[in-house]
Image (cartoon, rainbow, N blue to C red; front, side):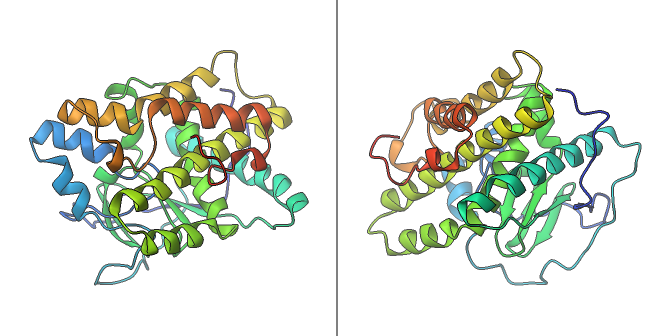
Length: 292
């Protein structure tokens, strides 16, 4: 992925080393938020179900305590990983500023917060164990870059475009927030008659964010031609690696479809590919289709 000589975003906050320390609370939701939790449970022997049931949702009410008020500065210029994140974020800004207006919507840029160990967001305190997440209450993406290491070493999905997919997926949740989709899903989840029904809405939300990530990739590559041959496979491999079925199989030896919140590996790959090949957000209607 050709990114080294391209412009970065000014909307990156660096809160690494802020001295907040490690939090024992696992917070945040949406996006890839609960995925690394399963890996941590595998290592520690903790029951993943107990951890995930206790994790607050980024779209839910904030936890007690101070709200997010710690504003970080820009990352240092010589930080290559932070520079990469900044460039990808700028790519998403450029793409969505072009994509949404013809559909009757304006795009406003989210901020992306880099943190280490734990972070205080408007959706509550979150530890690095939750992975990247988007908080609709402050329109910010939160990223501990140690997740990139997990993506490479534990999930077997290395490469720049795999990492770009992670960022683009969280920005996809921001697009959903701007379009009012996130609010409608939250309302439907609250009115759902069962946890399994509520989970189905979460799956459709996550798969749409995967599709929106693909839409970004389509437009960004058309405009800037930065994707090298074969790199799309990196994103597809990352999407497959973090499917609910694969993660549950690894964590507990069997899968429980009613507990899925992000979709299967096959579904995540298919919806990302749908967005990437079409470049059309209208093709990402995961709520209007019976078959995911």
